[in-house]
Length: 523
Image 1 (cartoon, rainbow, N blue to C red):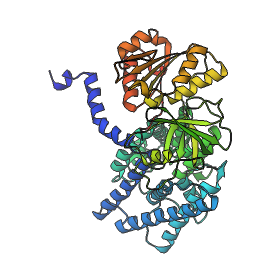
Image 2 (image 1 turned 45 degrees about the vertical axis):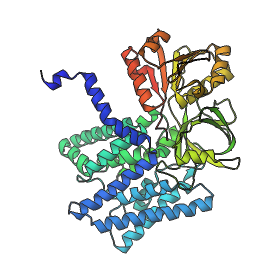
Image 3 (image 1 turned 120 degrees about the horizontal axis):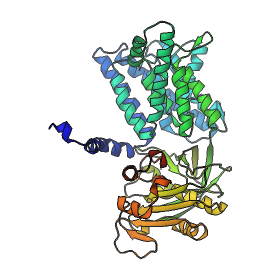
């Protein structure tokens, strides 16, 4: 019997997980924007290195000079606009825009080309401040900049990053980035849509579909566009179904054979049209919030209560991106995603945050906030919400501070007196680590919501409804005997969510009845 025959499907799964564990540890400890920054810098450095050995059409000096000018111009122009509009400065954003422009505009040391690069940088940054609705920009900055320059000075992007020699670097970094943001389904939809569109249109015109698809894979912008620009949160829809439609639309339009009248679409035009669609189906939110109160609600866990400049409309269980500019930001940056702990019925916005000894500079900055401190909340998103059908049986499984969306949902049920069949399994290390028990116990009394607290690192239990152990198959089988009839919501660390999901599937729970919260790392 061969080794391949001896290995079971579970063995292969375990081997694959072990291979991915180091990658997941790295990306969970790095913010999405900082990871993308590393990716783009890596592409520029790879291009310079390949050019030095003669594998690139452009010179290494031209690539380096153009990148330096693009990054510097975006950084300075962003500073100026931020000062004029009294907006918080996010250096990562301008650096990312500069790097993207450097990778899609052809490197050239002629004075006109360098001036064009500065002009494109200016248009890209200006679009974030001037082409806005409700203080929220609509278009991907780099894409709209090269669309405007193509119509103005008639200088267009070449998307030179889409070359065969750079393809391995684009794919490796792109896959890691997509895994971080959990948007691989968007990239897949986009690639499938553009491949099918290209093949159909080429065959309809009696061309070679194989040749066209081969050229598309090796010498086009599709992978860079899909991994880097399509998944950009600020200009894409906020829920999964809409994101899939958005990716399909851009995928169809980006095909080289597609044209609108006499005008053939380009990658940047396709993305800008997609951005318009995204805004129509998912209007954007941007709020300026001041700290109202901070209090400790469990060991090393604090609740932040923010006063909003206007009412926020959302569904319980959704999340937002928070920007807190601060000095000496570490590799995890000045932006962070947090699930909202507050209910739509409450006036203030609540965040429950766990603090660790070697926490990020972002969290240290949060601890230093006072009543005059301001944080920017944007990008309201998420499908981790209760079903419309109120008769469905729901099971909430939370680990640690991953319980915050359940606090939002349960508080909403209490305030609206909406009765649903809800059971909660809440896991934390010790009794002192459980947060929001007051809300869950109020729901037990008023709505019959049953919460079981599972302390993983404590054997002597004193609190009611609390047991010692872990959320394993035995516990789930005993406490949820009707599992096949339930919809499960899991929120916590990446490892915890994957482990519980595997157990539920092994118990016969259909994958469609398992909902997972977007939780991109404890950073």
